[in-house]
Image (cartoon, rainbow over all chains, first blue to last red; front, side, top):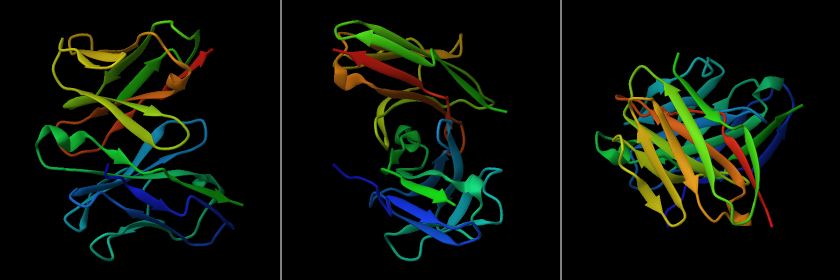
Length: 117
Length: 111
């Protein structure tokens, strides 16, 4: 079954450092997403990406965050200068997109746990 | 602000019991309600509901949406230890594909 793959599974970084989290979405999906889940809290939407540009973003997704699709398969989330409160599990997801019923069915990756010290 | 609330927060049952998990929502634009199961890591898709009153079923799991009450339930019959997980409810909007998640129900099934 097709899956979304994420690397690294766990990253530890010092406050103020830049991190890049990588994702390979399902190949025929058109929409890509990043969500995060702080330990013990809800899964929160960060950003969605379609046709090589951001289609929606939340208030969490400030200037410290950026996303990119550098080639035909990878989708990355960059945090420019990490803060303690960025410590969370970051989930990448993808969906078929469009107006059909499959549009809202997101397939999630296993997550990248980011620990900021 | 869109809101999705799940209850109970946690539940402990014994194998063979039947459980009902609840999800209620207040959102500006509604298109679909989704249930996910989260074990160690990635949420895995269970059901998507768009129409009121139509039950979706997969093995021992079933779910139904009530658009009048702005709610959904997820039933699990004859629970097994492998059903132990956090069950997440999420609502998708009419336009765009951002999901709003509830806080989840943590289910523990004891042997």
